[in-house]
Amino acid sequence: MSKNFFEESGILGPTNFKDSSDLIRKTSTIHLDTSLKNQIRKTSSCLRYRAFNEKNTLNSYDDSLINLQNEIYNMRDILVHGETKIVILRTEIGKLKQALQAIMHVQIQARNYSDEIIMKIKHPMTSLCLFCQPIKGSPNSSSTLVNRNKNNNPNNKFVGEDFNGK
Image (cartoon, rainbow, N blue to C red):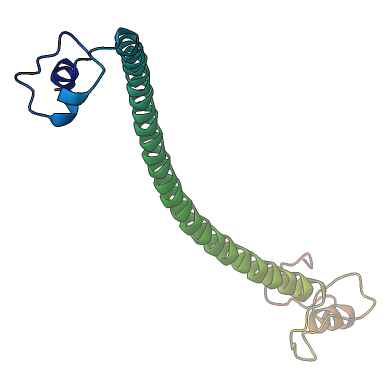
């Protein structure tokens, strides 16, 4: 299309004024002045080279733009997957915290219970009757009734003892 325009205007090839219907083309002095014609031809060839280079740079810009858009989409996907992983990990952390708190609570209760048992063993507060309570200062922890009866009647047998006094 541009080639036809240049041919009809006389920039490229001979001018055909008979077929030309444009008044400007008929009255133009381009076809008479060869230096002007050559200058226009040189300029047009430079413009063609520039247009070709600009077209290539535009294509490279388009390609780089497409590449950047693809990278942006990939980064968005990575961010979305990362965010979902973070949410999943946060819920798992919450579950682990709850389980750990439950375990710690049970351990604290067990420790308190074991401390109570140790205290009961060290300091028994059982309500024994007067006869069942141990004698203070006695190395033997047998009941008072047995000790008193053994001291008073050494030959008498009690239930659970044989003749040797055991």
